[in-house]
Structures are given as structure tokens and as C-alpha cells.
Length: 398
Image (cartoon, rainbow, N blue to C red):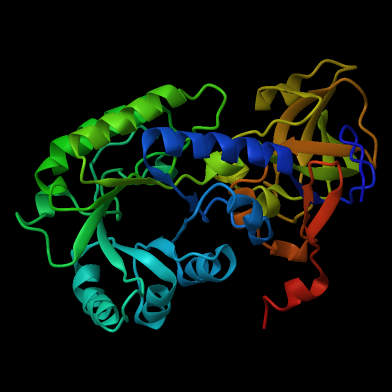
């Protein structure tokens, strides 16, 4: 379906719309950084897993990262290459399937290593000539992170993630080929520079014993103010200090950063104690959960983001609104935005940058109609990748 890029008339709501031009822009930048730095950058499914777009991704990258059996299967079956897999805790039920779908498996603890490495060893021994074996790693915790929101800080005191340097033996256990370190969230190249100092200070004695170093995700290299030249320099210097290491980055947000939006419609406008709320056909708790978890107030196209308390003291005649979701959760609202006109029922609202993390974290609380997922092609046509139905809700229940 051809659509007007400015109004998106004809596109049904609610709907997530991924813009192919913007996705390719990010992929080009990521591919260029990987080539210049001599590293591999792979896609983390925890932030983006729209598998019908994988043909576009395969033009730029070769591998992906998974944190569960289902994500590992998605890598093998839909992306077409085995996953770099890490989970805080593998289970007996899933581990054989994970081995079959993974090229790399990272253990979170020595107890997990001791429990599951014998299966990896047996699996590798049974592989025929020319068949790919599984490389094992340990997640390490450098006890350093510049993430301010504790909800997203994997290195907070008492974290369940990774092995501390003080817990490592002088000689790494059999079969440990790599280290995996993740301590960023939408972070800068400067944060990576500080992290590398801590990693090398704490884990330097063991780096000569491993073949690869996975620096995890959170490297928001597609953000407009990100210093990609500094990133390339840091990675090249790291490889110069440790030329035997293969270096891997696995960002999620960077791939889908500012590549699309959530399109909604106003279905009602209510007023209480002078506070006007535009009720939408989307839900923050169902369709934009990070807004409430973080919390942060997303950008709305053609509206000015204001301090949340401003809605209580807006001047008469100002077009100031909270935006409310259509679930029964009392806190399913955000505020405040100023528009340049009076909102009307049926009017469209565009929430910017709603592709990464949002599409993978949605839920069907209250049985609310789930947004469709569409892609705006480079020629201006809109293709619907998925429309959700009552049966999708029903089949999640029992």
C-alpha cells in the first residue's frame, strides 16, 4: 500500500511502523565501524527480533546473539546462522536445543559451567569433519558501570551477572575460549574507554588465555552525538594490545535506534480537576512498557514535551494534555505534551523511536488489541509484517 510519508493516512492504528531507509542507514554505519575497527558487530535479539526484516540485516551482518532457546532457534532458523548465546541460567530442558542452535555459549557462573560443559564437550566430540563446534565463554563482571538507572545496571553491587576477577582461578578451566562483558546501556564511546580500563586492570592476567572477547551491548553508535571515531580507535588499540583476540560487540538498540514509530489514534478526551487526558488506542503498559519502567517520556511528533507536573498548572487556552492508555491500569498514562491545536477524537498521534525494545516487550494485558507491525519501504509502500487477532490473545491463555 502506498502512503503519504507525512500523514500516514491509510495506515491502520495502532501500528508500529519501521522505516527501511532509516534501518539501512544504521546498518551501513554499524557495518562501517566493524570493518574499520576489525571487529564483529552482531544483532542482539533482546532489543530487536522482527525476523521478517532479517533479509535486510543479512546484507550487512552475519551473526546474532541470543539469551534463550527461542532466540537461539530464531537465529538458526530465520537468520540463517547459529547464535552467540548467553543466559543467566541454562536449564536441562533447553540446553541440548541451545547447543544445536549456537556457535558460542557463555556461562554466567562456574556452577553453570560445571553443570553443562560436559554436554558441550560431548557435543563437540560428536561433530563430524567440517561441522561447526561450540565455543564456550565466561561472563565476567568488572564491577564498573556508568549506567545511572539501577534497573539496567548489570554491575550493581550484588548483581547476579558474571564472575568477579577475585573468583577466577589462576588457570581458566578446560574449554573456556572467551570472556563476555556487558555493562553498558545506550552508552557513549567514553564509557567504553573507562570500561576497558577496568576490564584490562582486573582481568588482564587471563586475557592471554582466551581467544575472544565479547564486549556486549549498549554501544549506541547510531546516536547522532556518538563519537564513532573514538569507538574505532578504542577497538583498534584494544586489538593492538591483544592481537590474538577476536573482539565482538552485540548492541541491540543501535541497530533499530530511531528507525520507526508507534502510530496511535485519539479515542476520547477526558478532563478531571483541570487535567485533560487524551485517551488513545494504545497502552503504555502493554505497548510501551519501558516508558513506565525507566521511566521516560517519549517524544511525540508535532508536540512539545513538558515537565510532567506542568499539566496541573497549564494556562487556559493552552493545548496541554496527558496521553493515556486504554488499559485498566490506573497508572497507564504519561504526561505532559503541548500541542499547537485542540486534539480531536480520531486524530493520529505519533510516538517517535518506538521500535527497539518496544516490539519485543509488549504484552496482551486486558486483551487489548495489539498494534500491527509494518515496514515503510524505500519506495513509500507500506507492507504489513503482522496483524494481530483475537486468536493471538486466546492462544496465549489456556
